[in-house]
Structure formats: C-alpha cells, structure tokens
Length: 179
Length: 207
Image (cartoon, rainbow over all chains, first blue to last red; front, side):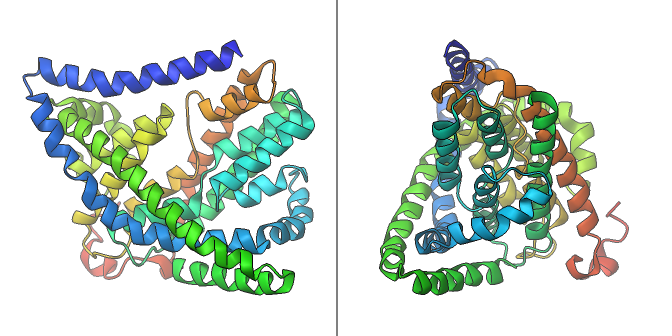
C-alpha cells in the first residue's frame, strides 16, 4: 500500500507543479498572472457547446449497446477468436469493452481482481491491458467534435489497429516479463 | 465512418435488446446516458477553463516556446504539416507532456485546444488532416511514466508488488506509440483516405 501511496503522492506533486509552478514562472517573467489566467479560462465554455452534441450522440449509443446485453454477446463471440492471439479468456472482455467504455472495462478489471486476487498474473495483465489502451470511440467523437470535423478519413481504422496492436503486445510482453 | 459505426451501434442494441427482452432497459439507458454525457461535458468544461487559463500563462511567459523547442526534433517529424511556432504545436506538446505524466484531467483540455488550433490551419475545413489522425492515434496508446490508475487498482485489490507492472506497461505503450505512428502514416497514403485536392495543392509541402 505504501507504493500506491507513493504513486498517488507523486501524481499530486506533479499536478501542483503544473498548476502552481506555471503561474510562478509567469510571475517571474513579469506576466500579469491572474489577468492572463482569466483571459485563457474564457475559452473554456465555448468548448462545452462544441463537444456536447458529439458526446451525447456517442454516449447514448454506447449506453444502449451496454443495456441491450450486446457487450456480453460480443465477448462470447470474440473470446475464442482472441485466444488465437494468445489473449486469455478472462482478459477478453477488457480488450473488447475498453474502446467503448472505460467504466465497463474498469468493472471487468475489478471483477478479475476480486476473483483472482491482486497478486495473480491475470490481475496484473488486466490492469496493463486496461491501462495501455484508451476509450477510442469516445476520444474520436470528443476530439473531432472540438474541431468540428465531419470527415474523419483514416482516423477510425488507425485507432482500431493501434488498439489491437496495443492489446496483443501488452499480453505478450506481460507474459514474457511477469509470467 | 463514424456515421456507420454510430448507426450500427444503435441498430445492434435494438436487435439484441429485442431478442433478449431488454428493450425497457435500453429505454431507461437513453435518458441516463444523455444526462451522463451532459454532466461529463460540464465537468470537462470546468477542467477546460482551469487548464486553458494556466496554459495562457504558460504561453505568455514563454514557457510553451521553451517546451516546444525541446520537443522540436520529435514534433517536426511527427507533424510535418504544422509550423513549429504555431499555437497548435504548443497545445500538442502540453497535451503529450500531461499524458505522459499521467495528468489526464489536464491532458484532455490541451488536446481539445490542439484540435481546434489544427482546424484553423486546415486547408479543407471539416475534413481531418494527417496531423489530426496521427495525433489521435497516439491517444490510443496511453504512454505514461507511472501508470497511477493501474497501480492504484492493483494495490486496492491486495497486490503486494503493484509496481511490477511499470516495466511491461511502458514497453507495451511504446509498442502502441510505434504502431500509432506507422499505421497512421501508412493509411494516410491510401487512395481512399487521401485528402481532397492534395495532389494539386500540397504536393510540395507534404514530405
């Protein structure tokens, strides 16, 4: 527990270094820090209006998928396929859910931690797989929303391929180092 | 592509829901998810305002210039279409720094700012540029020095040595980063994803 406490402390220090260190540096460079802060912060709200429609659209569709039980179905169908690439069946739900929903993937990780214990290889692998990938569809919707992009070109296939490579390399590297 | 994926997600949900008798659950989820999306966007806006304010100070004090100068060799290779002194580069480097340090709350505002700045220099507004696609692909591989969330989860699950995962975590992320760069640079050249008028307009600019 001391290690996680350390990593939490480390994260907090970094955050404060950014949040306080930048204005401090600005002050030494004779920048009117508060006025400048206000000027920048004004750009925050317009972003809300820009990303809201994209987030509502994407999250409603993901929510419907989750409520319908389609995620369970995907998992059942894809698990044998993923095992060909060496992805253990317990990890498969995380690999499948992660691009859609961070909370669904975290729930799967929590389930593995609960059933296999924190010291098991599966639990280590689960946190690595969940951590090295991101909620691709959500990020695509949000970031392209902020830029008002309609034609996403190769962004979707690229991100999906990168997710797959990331998951497979996480499984192989973890097996090599930790198993 | 997102048009088809979005439609498919909803159609699949309705078909599966009808087959498993979960239509009422789907109906319930619709209002829930819409409200969740609104609250999420609202929370993000709060973070956005805070970090954009901080970023403005970093900009005015010349800190971002220092930062971009340090990352210059990497940035010009990754994003050859963006002028090094453009505000987009500043936002991209702040986003990468925040991501690598694991400051997700700060990374997202910088990332959204970067996208908005990139759109300003987009010769074809509304159509994603190569830079945007590479930048987004890099987000699929969560490169971090210390994977705080993963370590915290493991420790909470009773792991004795949760920091075991740091080395495999970083190595897997690096594989993801390499894949992101290689795949996005390869796919952008495919005829079906080529930018419109690219041949006529920017043959000389693109490397």
